[in-house]
Length: 519
Image 1 (cartoon, helix red, strand yellow):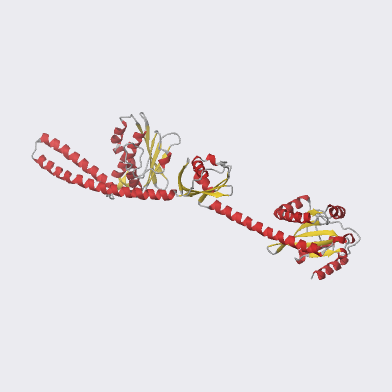
Image 2: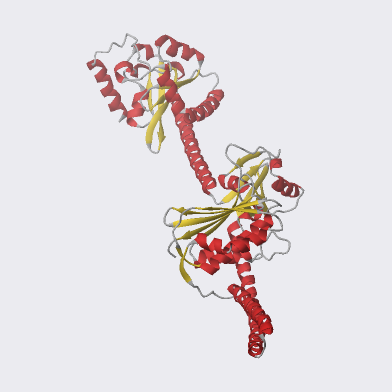
């Protein structure tokens, strides 16, 4: 096959009227084109240089020049003997960037190896041009995924030509190809590892022995509240992890170590594991925040169920004697004079008030009977205006009203009043003397309206802001944390609305009640 190919090439040289006595003028790539190809082959060239320099070092005394080409026959690198480089490269013009072609080079091993895909040797007079008759050339194709991507060639003087040179070249090229496959496999694994780390729901931090952080994946940044613009340098910058890292360095095993990370935006609960990794440490952060929240909700639900049962029992025990008292007072009222009737009327009114409070207490234990009708929220707030004002007297808090035109909503007026009273009471207790509370009512898009309570107190602590509305969570010394929970239930479950609590960026807290017009 090779002999037949070389014979046909020689015939084409004569057909193309090439002169074997004249050194051809080889075409060359531009410096930019050569640089681009060398950049594309960088990893391949690095491995070729590593193996070929080792081979040349062990072949000292034998004049060998190594040339590397791409898949189009462009010479992109030279290695080896200076005497051959001076003769062939400088005098003949076969320098880096030369485009090997049959029309210019005639019979040559490089194009034969590229076209046939097998090792080829062209020795002495087998070359078409006379200036190459004193050389022996050996070329082997460089394969990648069964495709020829270039060649590696060896050239030496004819007097030192030896079949072992071709055997050595094939062995070295085989080693280079195996190394290239291994490099590609490692690159694939690195990309896979990188993708897994980038997409993982587990946080990973790699810390070197000098305490420098060399790798931190997006999940770990999210847990720690670190932005890409604010990269961490050392483990010492992470105060909580730093203390645990010190324990690990001292020999304490760190496995499922519970740590709570708190930043400006969020609070995260994590289980942390420490593992030895090369000359440093691999830290894993397992975010269990959602699990702990669910667990907390379940615990709170259990507590609430107990409180509900207790509330039902207490209410029942209170209502029984109240019924008896109410009956006796009514009997006394029939037989009493006008002055005594006045007292009995007051007593009956107070008993009815106790009975009403008891009924409201039952909200905790069972669904309340809903009495819905069309109500103007502004009128509901106005109806309890005197009661709201009574909360403000001791602290001289000013309540400002900002009512816009809104449509009536289908709601339970008494329950909404209960919510408004509770929120105003909380706001007044939160502000200092001579503070202010603004109550506004305005329409929203999508057939909704917003009732806003905005005070100028100190706002809520960041660590509990997102947990408000849970039972038994309170900032008051004597509070029980049930008030907001009941309000939240009335707004969200009974009226299909939303209760939103936030802090003002300047000062104070904002409580928004979003209510649909039709519920």
